[in-house]
Image (cartoon, rainbow, N blue to C red; front, side, top):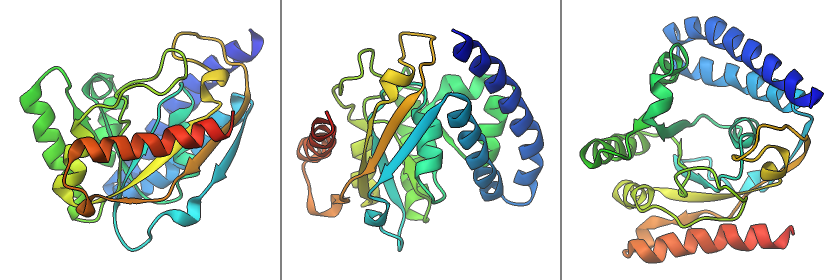
Length: 231
């Protein structure tokens, strides 16, 4: 319980500090704020007592933008991804986060993309914007499950991210996150500490697949197999 209290207080203070001190960086270049956020993520993992293991970084293409598609186990997935992926990227995240005072302003300033899953027209516009960003050279992250898993198990995938990937003709890099649910699950408030393993899996070329269902299953099978191998 003390670890949880320490983390909650520390997380709030550290996050506010990084938002206030990081915002001026966007006036120079939003990429600088993204790089600054790496240190926020490192501190979050440290305060949570989390050891991060990153595998497969050499698999990510360096000559083009990619779409990272990780499973979503728990609350520490986001700092783990910030630390584990050493390249610039932008989040495709639920619009509710952009409505949080200061936090939402920071997300927009960096260039993250809001998606409103309750409004089909707005969701399609967000996916179109993400596809344009990717075509222009910006990598993005989208959680294909749409939200965190209640029990840590891989959930069904939503179609939107795969439509976006095929529209952009982008490479998908599946990402398998394991251990995050044990550190802090969606359904709980207790921070237990522990190890998180983040594995960047072999890229999947969307231009070679013309069936969205086939692409979804290919990505899901890749993540499922990686998760099964570490149990």
